[in-house]
Image 1 (cartoon, rainbow, N blue to C red):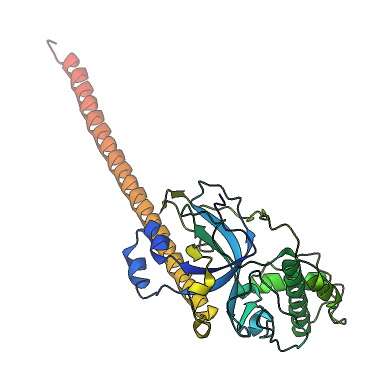
Image 2: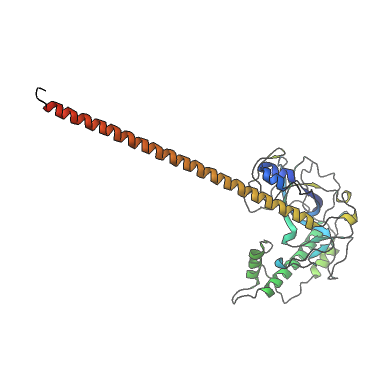
Length: 344
């Protein structure tokens, strides 16, 4: 039994709004999310971010979005519409030199591209519904096509760095490796490492890509284990989410029979999916802020009540001490004078 979907597989994902909001127990958040329609999106499951187990309630992946045609430009992230990879049978690309990746079996739509960029990749959780994914018909990238895809993604990453370098001239003593880190910091992306080595004066070579494309797709599609790099406070019991939510990895339901969900002309634009995802991120963050504010107010209220009780107790003790001190002093005075009275 294959209890989790293998990386390198295409799927249809749908955000599970109710499962996301249930642990918050926040009527305000539920009301704010009432108008978020369930939206499906084509995704490519790239990397497993946590080691999956059969009893894991969810499986965490890094995914890339798939959409009809070219991706939208994002000047802030230095991305352009041609930063995408056509998925065969689609062979159209503005460069005229970028070859399509070829899934196996063939992709059911002829108008799709895999969109590239930090704004087109998400960390998401896939609900473990106890399915056996082995007999399910699925569309996946063979190993050689995955390597080809990574080279093309690397070319686009280099172009982003070079564009950023043109917009932000380097101070003396810095190189493009520093630029890669600066772009990560500016855009919130983690695509580039500090050891990036980019020469913007050279046109990226695609000879090695073409050679890979001509090879047979014999490779190992075993899952890649990758540490998420951050603490994950999600807690689940059975199918119920009982802990706090990471706004970066909401639970989703997926289907691997991607051709059964859309007609070619109805392939959804990932922009709608991203918009709803970001809206839900905002709602969850606002709910967490409210919860923290309420907890802080309650703690302050309890602290003030405790201080009031302490002050009241101290005053009473002071009052009682003063009262008994005066009584004891008066009794002592009376005793002294009584002893001095004649006939005492």
